[in-house]
Amino acid sequence: MGGPYASQTAQVGGLPTIPVDVPVCSVFLVLFLVAAIAHMTLFQRNLKRNHKFIPSAATFGLCMSRLIANAIRIAWACHPTNVRLAIAAQIFVAAGVVILFILNLLYAQRILRAAFPRLGWSQPVSLAFKALYFVVVLSIIMVITVTIQSVYTLNSNTHRIDRAVQLYGSTYFAIVSFLPLPIVLGVLLFSHGKKPVDPFGTGSWYAKASIIIVVAVLLCLGASFRAGTSWMTPRPLSNPAWYHHKACFYVFDFGIDLSVAAIFFVARVDRLFYIPDGSSKVHHYGGVISTISEDKGACGATPSPKSSEIRAGRDLEGGDVPRGSLSVL
Image: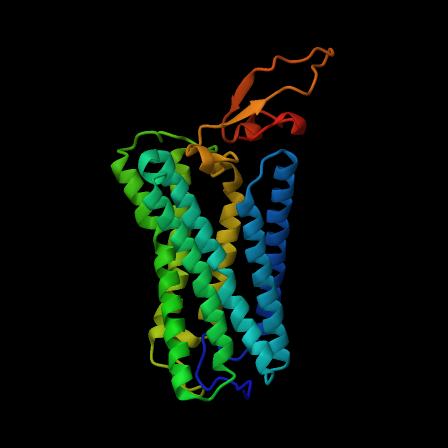
């Protein structure tokens, strides 16, 4: 196997240069670093309060992948003939955003289950969502694989197959980014404005729906742009189209991702979309059982061994839950 060989077709963002890309990437690098610190700090603070919210850690992962992508792009600008840096930059640009697709779809799934528990928790619907998540992961692995393979061969048939896989991946991701919109709008339409049957987290029903809709519009915009440009006829490096401009790359890739990460933090999705541990086992968000049997009261008296129900999000508004007294079923 020879190579790696530099791409002979124009790419969105083009070849990075020191005068333009290094300053822009440096700004994004700092902003994603701040976002990563913010989300990880929030995740750790919540853990100390027995409020485990994994999506905060996942958003931290997205910010770190974008930070690395910008760092590699800076290195690529300084070494424009290094094809391996170009490959690494493309991989990190493509891989990070799928985290946001999965998170927003997960929030939409929670809305569906809260409004229509019988439908949302049914086996066919649950399996459908799991299949969507699995195929997202499988698809990004396929896209990364063919991206690497395409620069290590000059075989035209292999390039044709690699392009077909890349087109499939960009199209599938665009569809996944769009799915939260019909799910949430359908829930709002068919629930007729009623309160959810199985509420979760804090904040209003419409606040949750609004966050999902705004984020879905942003993610779908970026994914649709990438899919649309992928389906366009490849153009030579010497004759790029308007959509290959650097501004399009930074706005539709890093700009949208940074905006979504900021929305998740400012809107406090760790409160809005929090559900108790073990909800998937009992198929409801109503709460978990807290069995108090070890800790003693302030005057040395042993508390009553009664079990009390802790609602989702209660630890955020009503104080911390003692670590030694919470048994999650």
